[in-house]
Image 1 (tube, rainbow, N blue to C red):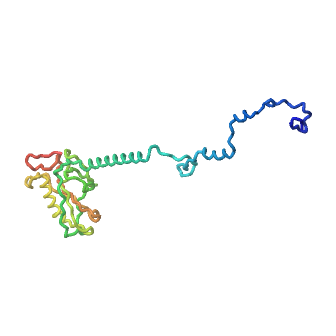
Image 2 (tube, rainbow, N blue to C red):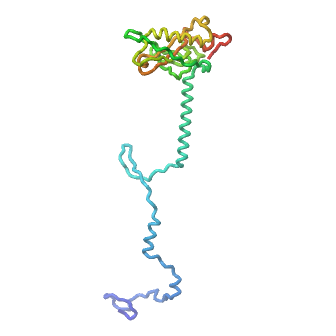
Image 3 (tube, rainbow, N blue to C red):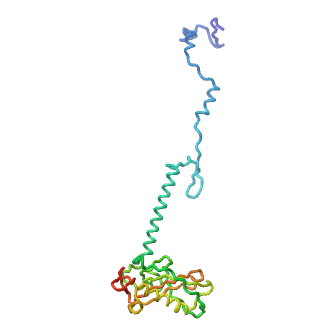
Length: 267
């Protein structure tokens, strides 16, 4: 050990080989020490670290098109508030409903749309005779419903018997005059005589009211007819009978109140 307190290693040759220290002449007085900035202790650093660490965000697992997990990513956050998203969904749903109603209304009211042609639905008498194995099938079509308006004009495509709606201004064979409602048990399909008498007579009266004239003024080319439920639809609960005006040959224009003087109608 040297006189000034410096330590020398065992391999140091002499004190004279020591290089001069440039800080030997530096004097740390009390004023210099008081002006310094104290450094935080280790405990203070450790307490501050949790406050600065960002909270972890939830992650979602991604999968490839075959359902195999491929890793994780940050959770997706939708733009806009939930209230805005609900409002947008409500508006889109309302718009879709309006479009659907317009399309359905246009489909079911291709006819002249005559408000006066709508008549109250009559309930037909309950049948007392029922179909046997030899009774012929009743004429029926596919495409009419209880929502079809009287005054609708149409043709029937054969042999499929599908209804083809037509504007009444175009050539057509059939024009719906009224809807009737039959009654009876689902397991008791009416006999053919019920349709040819009870149903046919009701449709004749409905055609006269639709034309606005007694049968004496009815055009010879127009006859009352009907489309009844099939045996299968009757068993399923269908009771709607469609009374129609059948034009043979096909005609143009609506027959509604065409028999009344000075009230010819075209559709």
